[in-house]
Image 1 (cartoon, one colour):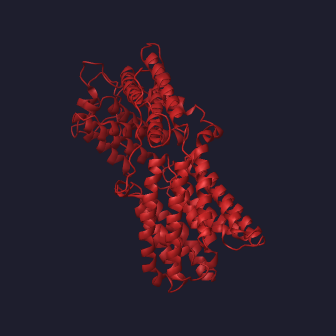
Image 2 (cartoon, rainbow, N blue to C red):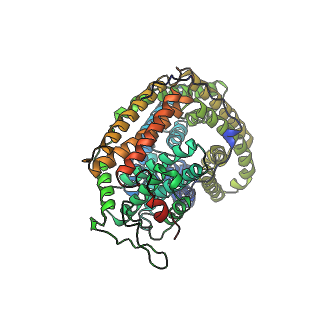
Image 3 (cartoon, helix red, strand yellow):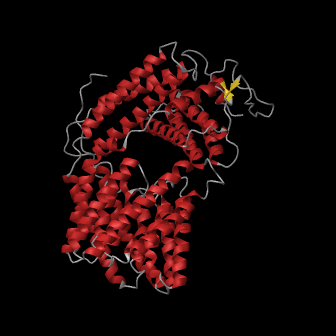
Length: 588
């Protein structure tokens, strides 16, 4: 570890226009958009036919579970969706019971704030998201202010459970058609990120941001592949070899071919055959090709379905799969400040809304709950996005209300359109999605019966401003003072992982499995260090962060990663010609 003197951390400027800048849409923006429509439409239309659209709020609670886990392999998605449905039912049950036992608004807001804190912490600890806790909090908070009797609770929960089961089926529906879809997308993202870093390295730029993004994408790809299960498959092996290619490109970015990496990424995203890559440790000048340039992947000795180098990679993957995940309780401790922020901010926002005479204080509560991100800077950005999106959204609601009030069917169709628009746009920027989320939330309030548009718009604007202001003040008051300690622990973890990887790289007797495990452990530690440092840099009222040590630790870790990759034979030694560049990196 370098003995460089820690440099003070300045609080980042709070962005306004930057928070509203539009980004590129998600690769799979259409999947959650279509899924939520498919999950919401059948139960809602059935209630229209039965003349009981007043019950649609409960079925919609279950249907919204279809928004989750689109980036998870299907084996994992089945479990995650099941837990999301159960979590939604648990929060809804508590809310409905509270609503049936008391009509005291202060008590209901308190219950809603505690539920929001629990939902936030559990989603962060289990990394469920997006949309994480926001949907669960919206469902439970809205249910708190719907008049209930104890006798109605079981029936309303049954409706939500039935819709949740349908949402589970919708989420799992693509599995038979494209069983490796999530793994293919994660691999493609890793290849694209590696290509972007290779382009900056070839241009002589520092590329620190591109490098961090590339390592994060490669780490996410490995996590996706590892989560897919232990059952071997040809497609899984092919994807693992491509992720190895992305790692090789990171270790030798100036020599990597971005064109080939992007070509692989495009092929992986499609539905055709996954590109086959040869073993980069070959000494015969690279893989053979036909006259047309097609690859011949049958070269070399095979064992367990691939060349020797591929077999070694699979051994390393198996070794990492054997490592037990961290227990849930160990992930809850660092989230204590987030829990306090959520509970305090949501409660105060609800109380202020009540003091102003609002009939639906849960709007302010949900606004506050939606703000809390990894640090103060990001929380401010989310507050700006929420306010702008909601203010534009109420104008959209006023425009669509005459159509929605034409009848129950028109109301359901407007809700479906808002659902689709929200998920299609939210990947560009949160505020853009909120433009559709706001009329959606307002239209849901009209399911039991039509209400004055002007009153709804006024209440929503006031509650949005109250929730954003009070929620941000609570975030400033409850800072994460342990963020600096977590950076120190992350630095120590990188040091230990780097020392172990360097020791194994220098040991001629090191096994392929040990080298693979050490390399991936170091890559994961570097990704965690960058995420921890970025989160801590946006916090206020804390000691200076060792920014220089973080940079030096990252640089040393990247050099060790390159040495480990070279020791495995994935790269030629210094001063030799790069087989990767001149064979694998060349366009066919």
